[in-house]
Length: 229
Image (cartoon, rainbow, N blue to C red; front, side):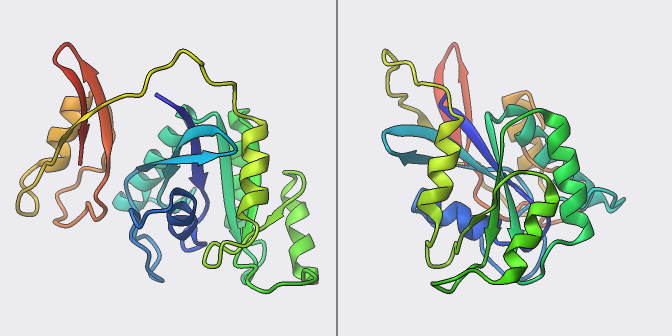
């Protein structure tokens, strides 16, 4: 599988909007309500000849005991563990908040390269003074981005690609058989997908409607290569 780049951050900073912009598809649900994205969502991205798998994650609340929020945090941690590069998304409008500091500290412990994205920089011209507050996260130079308008996304991808290892030139394009898992709420669809994949790919809860996005997952076995949704 391609190199993996994970998009992480606290809730409602625009991670899913950025994911959709970079992948060129409206795969992730976008809404002003925090916590809409819950499972890991994968999409292919290409920049300057480099192809990689982009992963959108739910908002990280480091110290919440809420069942769903804690499982969202676990899904984000799994994405971080599998990623070569991590994009930390923050919000210019709200500035640096305590949760941003907590998430940044968590990411630094991973030892992975971290690219700091300051989202919602929606105006062209000189950056506001509030932008420079994000240097306090200790992650190097922040990159100003407007995920809605696409401003700064090229600079963001340039920085990400600096950390990606060279691709295997002999690698072949993977052809996956697409399988849709459907059914009424709370019949065990996510549990079935997790069992097939052999990992905690999707949040499992007795609360109906826990899964919201159409989430692609990949598995290879003796029968072939499959993508479940």
